[in-house]
Amino acid sequence: MTWKSGEPKRRIAVLGAGFQGVCIALEIARRKRPVTLFDREAAPITQAGAKNEGKVHLGFVYANEPDRRTADAMIAGALSFDEPVRRWCGLETLEPLLSTPYVYGVLADTMVSVPEIEKHFAYIAERIAGRPYLGATLGAPYRRLDQREKARLFDDETTLAAFATEERAVMPERMAELLRGAVAAEPLIDLRAGCEVQAVSESGGAFTVSYSRDGVAERERFSDVVNCLWTDRVKIDATLGVKPAHRYFHRYKAGILVSLYPGAPQAPSATFILGSYGDAVNFGDDGLYLSWYPAGMIAVSRDIAPPDWRNLPDEATEARIIRETAAAAARLMPVLRGHEADLVANARVLGGTIVATGASDIDDPESRLHRRIDIGLSSVGRYHSLDPGKYAMVPYYALKTVDRLLGEP
Ligand SMILES: Cc1cc2nc3c(=O)[nH]c(=O)nc-3n(C[C@H](O)[C@H](O)[C@H](O)COP(=O)(O)OP(=O)(O)OC[C@H]3O[C@@H](n4cnc5c(N)ncnc54)[C@H](O)[C@@H]3O)c2cc1C
Image (cartoon, rainbow, N blue to C red; front, side):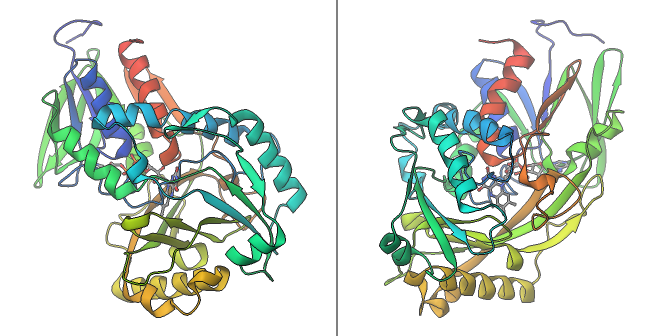
């Protein structure tokens, strides 16, 4: 069986209905092509794509990378985030989903000095000033706070310097809900929920996707396949004979979402740099997301695919993550002090797997986790495998992938 470009018989499969797979399926459908979208879960975007922090990185955090390639990549992704997402969801603006802008706090044991960090921020500012980002135009992309402003936001003793930026996050759970609605309303997307992909093989110029549904093995033929399985991507590539180009370091990381309660303090959106620290993201009515790396990073794997971590964490670990994350946030942000018990009482844990190349964790200055350059689209004929690397890169790569698949519109 063979397909030629433009033939009516062409059948496209997208493996993985996470944020990445859903964006690709929506773009294929908007270009008037039918697409089959597989996922083992009962609904799209329930894993990392829904349970992350949602920062649309402008590259500020990647300050430990002299050639700044990751910052360049993040800038390209971030500046392309808004338009396609609004188009897929039929939204005028993403504003209701956005966090307040991030302030960066440089902690005393930072692995990159304050002058080097400022040099990095200036590099980014030069590239993004005046460019459109999340529906606004970037004005003064960063500003070093004076001593009084710094002490108001952050623990003065442990914070060496603070920089206000215009970087923001989108609320991933709200984004996922909107995209699920868009998939449900799109007749050209055939969603195969509850289907666990097990292998892809090729014969006669077409691909067979083998999967199991309710324990029953099934297979289907496609002319084109896009693998967006995130945790299982490299493993499924290998079933087709596509070898991984890198070593992978998988981490299961959890943060907490504190729902808005009467009298809740207004914390800044903040990222503490540079080391194994954490973040705070103020999503207004949608709550306050907090993460603290030493508390939330609970499993690692260097295997081709991580173990099935979907049942992590257990109840006791959840309680510990909530307690320790709230305590760390209150240590670093004076506005949260005295609120620890309320933060704990109103928190739930959100976690998922981070796939990245490398061999050591972020407390190692040489770790490849300080970069995200081994990412993107690789294709063998009509088989495409996509590692978005970050949430922020997903819409950008969705357009690139569909351009390669169908030709530019
Ligand atoms: C705690 C945390 C915080 C993060 N914070 C940020 C951030 O602030 N900014 C940022 O840019 N990035 C962030 N990330 C990274 C970001 O979440 C991921 O890069 C991105 O979401 C991955 O793409 P995805 O959404 O498609 O993955 P997923 O949502 O995991 O999608 C993969 C899909 O494939 C399905 N699947 C997997 N295996 C199979 C199989 N064998 N058969 C069928 N279906 C299968 C899954 O069910 C899932 O739906 C964070 C990640 C975590 C975990």
